[in-house]
Length: 210
View 1 (cartoon, rainbow, N blue to C red):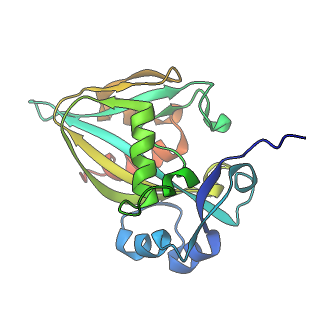
View 2: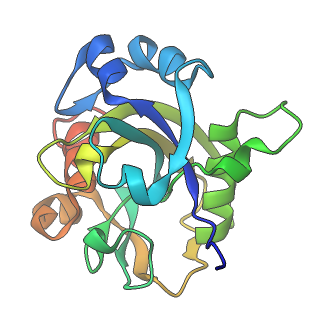
């Protein structure tokens, strides 16, 4: 009987996250969390099929948001609709502002100079979008959403990419209706977006903080 190899993804224990400081929604206190969450002593790679239904683990996910400010200083954000072929079936047909995905055990196969998380984020970005413009990026917060089935088993690290030109394009057939839209338009239609996008947009753009 042939065994089908299953993807092994990067996780931390939910108990560790609670010990560092539980929150629901968005946290800007990255210094409080990231060193411990990314420490090899606290991470492991487990079967994705198992941890998708096991809230005792949190899968670490880079969530990359692209922002463009035009000459008129209007802020726009890259957004799209998730197609049926993307990995997380529970998010299909939802709109999103985040690009990213699971960090896999294969991302740890490098020479050790690059952290597996960073390699996984680079891989996910390369697979999902073409970034045809210079940019700067920074980590700006964490997302935790225990109010949804998807959120209970994931923990998002939010990266804000400021692009020189609005030239970010889908590489995948399942990233649909993509493009930059004014922040105000997205905020007015948040009910159509996945919960992480709602949390992220409200935290980064909904209170006047940039």
